[in-house]
Amino acid sequence: MNALAGCRVLDLGIITAGAATAACLADFGAEVIKVESASYRDPFRRWLSDKPAGATDDLPPFFKATNRNKLGLSLDLKQALGRTTFLRLVANSDVVVEN
Image (tube, rainbow, N blue to C red; front, top):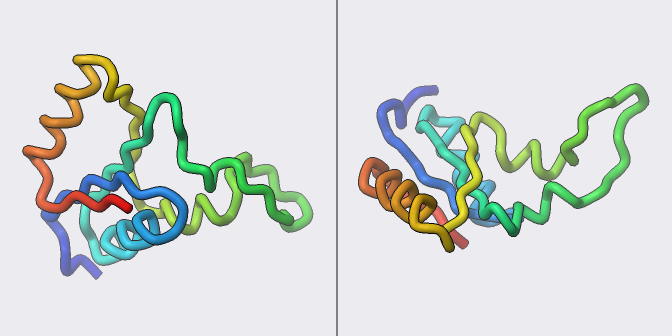
């Protein structure tokens, strides 16, 4: 489905609520850009879980499930360049998701 084609979403969500909401928007065709802090990454990156035999992925299933179909980048908002880049992304986005 591409009901949201042409819509840009800036995703600041972590764990489930924000990240899963943005993933659903991506499923419907929105361009979703996940922005993570340079110093505090999404905790789902560290959640351990059982992996199927032979799995070699370094990302836990929870992270993969809530960040499917997304682009991603890391910014340091404590630095001027990080803030400038972030504000430029906000100005060029239709939706900002945060939780």
